[in-house]
Structures are given as structure tokens and as C-alpha cells.
Image (cartoon, rainbow, N blue to C red; front, top):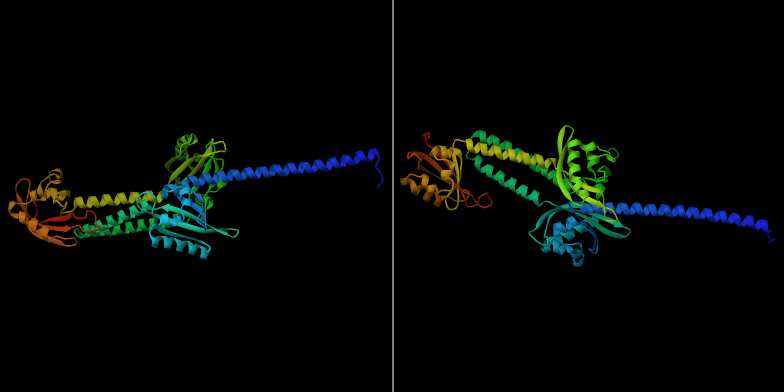
Length: 451
């Protein structure tokens, strides 16, 4: 190769330096892009962690060996176990389901999820570390990463809902017992109450099924999940609620709560958010008008912290509780109607304790006997009988049993000393009924009672 002249060597070195500078610039640009992607991934990871920690349902993510990669605070509160305790035990299912048959059923559900390669939801009962068993709705989905299979499960506590269902059933049974002693108009009223209760149960069942279908995190959750910046403007919109309501995220991002949901909701949110920006976690309820009707929500707000530990915003989870509010209002109206019917019927109604002391008397009974309620409630029932008919109560008590009614013609003594003839009917309240062991009674006068 011919030797280059000094001038040619200089030109050759200039060209090489140019190529090297271009390569260095390209490497710097790739490094900057890589750092930006890593920062974006860290931000998304922190946001996901904050959402999981703010969730009101228990969330766990494990592999086939039973190791938990995720065990959120709601799950720790629900079970009483920490993530470390769950991973330290040989089989966490044996802690949640101490009875062998229940543990086997839980394992069978996991096998069914694996075989189907899908997800499933089921209502079951778990045993927390402390306290009585708790009914829950569990949704489990199979997630395959490479050749490894993992399980994502959501645990929703339905204890309060079960209590409400039990109270509704007891209330219905009590109403059915009273209907047997009432007029045709009361029977028609009971039919309407029965229909209302069935509608409430169907609505409650539909809500439970909807809540039990959570199969993944954030975007698959039915709640309205959001983030707010320090200026209390929406910076992130997640979950399915907004999409179902026809609200686009682009229409909410950059706006305040008041600009999206109205001034009253905005004023309330601004007030509670100041405490959250100072590090507190707050749960509150609010409402706004949607399609001409009020919509009620329960919202959980938690501070969103940056890498330096300082509060950089707010993460919130809002749940639509409109149906629950309507159900509570309907139940209150139903109880008010029932009490009004009892207090306006013609017959006297009362309830005796095991010691045969009056624990309740309706107003018609007080009017028959001429006593104010406070002078007979809490006193022995015998004081209302004429002396010669004291035997009747003893006989009725001997013949009275759960599910069987006994009656007798007796003479009651009014407060003014006059006697009235009446038919006394008693029935003991049996097992599984409200006031088990007490006696329910009806007094029906044989002729108009003196005033």
C-alpha cells in the first residue's frame, strides 16, 4: 500500500473522527431513550403498587409452589397474616381452610382453574388468624408467564352483606307470623313487602356477582380508580367504571373533581384532599347528579409518594354505592310501615319474656286496658288479669309450645277497675326465630272495650 502524504493522513484522520463522533452521538441518544423508558417503568411500577395497597379487596399473586409474590395490605387485614407468615408456612391453604374437606375443596378449585386455563369465582368461608370465620367471594385467574403458571386471586369480604341477608330473612319471617293475625288489607300489604324484599335480594345478588368478577388488576377492576396531582387535577384514570358510564379519560385528565362531577363534589374532595396531601389516608362518601338521578360513591384516598418519600399526589379508589343506599332507604320505609300497621290494628298485641314480663305492648292493647305503655311494659303480665282468672295464664303457659297456638276466654281488669271479656291467644317463639323463648300474644275483645 502506497504511503499517504501528510495532507492525506490528516484528511483520513478527520473522516475517522467524524464517524466516531456520529457513533458516539447515536450511543448517547440510545442511552437517553433507555433511561427514559426505565424511569417510565419505575413510575408505572410505583403507581401499580399504590393502587394495590389502596385496594379494599385482598389481592394475592403466587406460583404453583405456593410462594406469594404479592400479598397486599387488604389481604393482611382480612386474614390477619402478613406476607412473611404466608410464605413461611408449608401450605397457606391449610391456614385459611383448617378443616380437611374445605382445604380439599380449595385445592380442587385451583385444579379446575388449571384445567380450564381460565378464571373462576366462588363464595367460600376462610378462617383468619384471629376471630371467627369470615365469608368471602374469591375470584382466581390462571396467568402463564413463559412455561411457569401463576395464580392471581381477589378476596372480597361479604360478611356485612351476609349479616344484612340474615336480618332480612328474620324480618320476613317475623312479618309472616304477624300477617296470620291481621286483616285482608294487612295481607295485601305483606305481599307488597314480600315483592320489595325479593327485588332487594335480586339487586344484592346482582351486585355480589358483579363484584366477584374481578379477574385482573387496575384496568379490569369495576371501581373508578384515579390519581390526582398536587393541584388536585386528574393525572390518571383507570378501571372500568368510567368506560361503562361513557366517560372518556381524555375528558377528565387535567381537570378538577368539581369540573368533572360538579361543584358540591369538588368542594368536598378539595377539603379532604388537603389532609391526604399531608400524609393521611381518608375514606369518605359523596354524590353527584348523573342522567337526572343522584349517584352515591364511597371513596378511599391515599397519599402517592415519590422515590424521596414525599407526597407527590393522591391515589383514589371510588366505589358506586347507589344500590346500597336505595336498599337501606327501602328497608327503613318497610319497617316504618310495619310498625304503623301494628300500632293501628284493632287487636291488642304483646310479647312476654321467659319470666312472663311484658317486653312490648301495642297501643290498641293499652287503650283496651286503660294503661299508658310505661305502666305495663316491664311489669308481670298477671297484673292485667281479674283475680278469678289468674289460672288461665298458667294453663296457657303449660299448653303453649313453639309453633302451636293456644287460646282461652279470660277476663282482664282495666286500670279503672272494670273487667272486660276477651279471647287471649299465645304462641311461643321457637328456635331460629327472633326472640327465641319469648311468647307472642293477641288479645281480641268479645265486645267493644270501654273507653
